[in-house]
Amino acid sequence: MDMTQQGLSVLVVDDEPALREVLSLRIADWGHDVHAVADAAEAEREIDRRRPDLVLCDLVLPGSSGMALLHRIKRQDQRLPVVMITAHGNIDGAVEAMKAGAADFLTKPLDYVALFALLEATSSEVQRRRASRSLEAQLDERVGAGRMVGQSRAMRELQRTLESLASSDASAILTGESGTGKEVAARAIHDASARAGKPFIAINAAAIPEGLVESEVFGHEQGAFTGASRARPGVFELANGGTLFLDEIAEMPIALQPKLLRVLEGGSARRLGGSRDISFDVRVLAATNRPPAQAIREGRLREDLYYRLTVFELTLPPLRERTGDVALLSQHFVREFGRKHHLDVEGVGDAARELLETHAWPGNVRELRNVIERATIVARSGWIEPRHLPPYLQALRHGGEPTLTLPAGTTLAEAERLLILQTLDRVGNNKAEAARQLGLDVKTIRNKLRAYGRDT
Image (cartoon, rainbow, N blue to C red; front, side, top):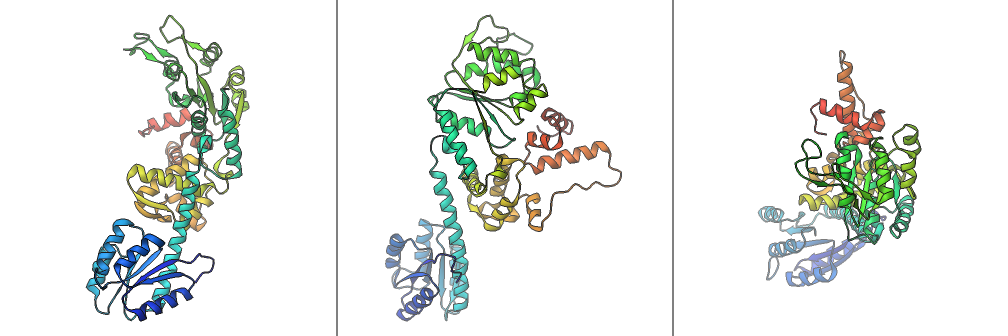
């Protein structure tokens, strides 16, 4: 037995005293905790009392049969492995037991080499399940602004800062690469603040067509422009009493930023086509995936708006710097998408986890989230294995890196299309990260995708 693994708790159910004794001695000698009983009624009491990791059960028992016990165990706990012991030649009974949910079967006289291998395999599975439960326990411990997932040093420092921000009502700007979780952080601040019971409104300036930004932010009255068939409140009105999160603030049209500054300073806004100012009480949190100094130099962000927003500036660490958080985040997403899609995936297997921890995650947490959702849907139950991961991650098993091969005669336009689409696939369709890697503007990526007939 691998002594690095913790021993199993094994329950033996057999009415032959000699076999119970031999099995108990052998299993204990291999380093496992073993308890043996003679019938189904005793077995059920021991299962409730000891919560074993594995049940070895004879198919034929006095009173209630081993098959009936198997059915009762599976109704209570589908994941408890049960191995049936059958008389030589009773293959039909073994097949029926497998159909009813038995993990395996052994025939008499017992093959102890096969039993040892079975216990080794079960031990590995149980260790994996214990590790998964440990991650689940860490996830359940999150409170307040600490609901952000992560136990790395970088995340513990971030969580302390978030708690401090939550206790105040000051505006702040969140910086960091695309996909690092700036909106999640903003929502954590809101949920831990005195405004928690009020609205949290998020708006992404990069995702709104340029001609509609002013209407989205400030609202409009009926008839203010062509197509304005009814009045619509802006995000400041919608967030009144709560928190407004302005994502990708450096992508907001520069001509609109002075008006936003006046609204922030005055605490009131006027709808397009309106004649009166509407007052509001809103805490503003903004975010950008560009370094603010760079955005100011490039003329994307007004310096006076930046200073108005930046009572605090908080930088979210990229996932590649969050050593040890990939496993915890993966379990978090497995749980989330298992519930969402009604699937029974337990967690990420060891080989798949090694691949996830090897990857540099250019798309950060958003990329990991997309990867785990896809893998959960593909796996459907059990454990996520390398074959359930996207091809670009499977390639890491052989030391490969994603490449783009172009046939002779490929046009420049087609090469550009292939490069953009492959980059998007590699970063989990994260358009902001793809734009950063390709040296393009997010709006350029969106326009290219429209031209390719792809949903943006």
